[in-house]
Length: 173
Image 1: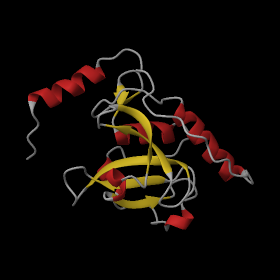
Image 2: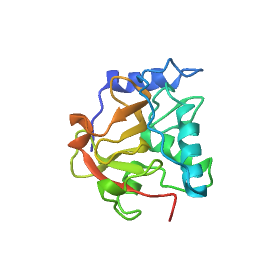
Image 3: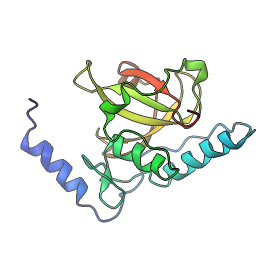
Image 4: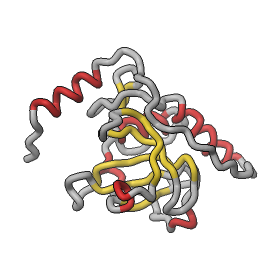
């Protein structure tokens, strides 16, 4: 059983009570443009464009509602549902889906799956690749860290490299 302190829960309730998304916390970096050669690539670009509309939206535990905020899997689920792609609602549901990709196979729109922040034995976080470059890719996700919002992060940061579990293509399957 996990014990969560009251101040920690208060942060979630405060974040979930926001009527409008907070200001974007992520620093925008230049997007690496890749040639669009087919409908799969167009769909991938559309998925990322849609996801980026929610940059700065508050983190809210167990939510997939943009008016309240998102948790990580709620955000991923919300984005892909918009494109009629059904995915698990909890991060742990991503443990056994899809074929694991090698870093040189990562593409925009693929889902990154991470171990939990405190529990390195179970899945605890997910995000969507928005700039594909192997283990130096960037991904968009709803962070429960200090940002408490939808942000773009570097996969090769210490925080995420240590927790990386796998990357899966959920679009081409």
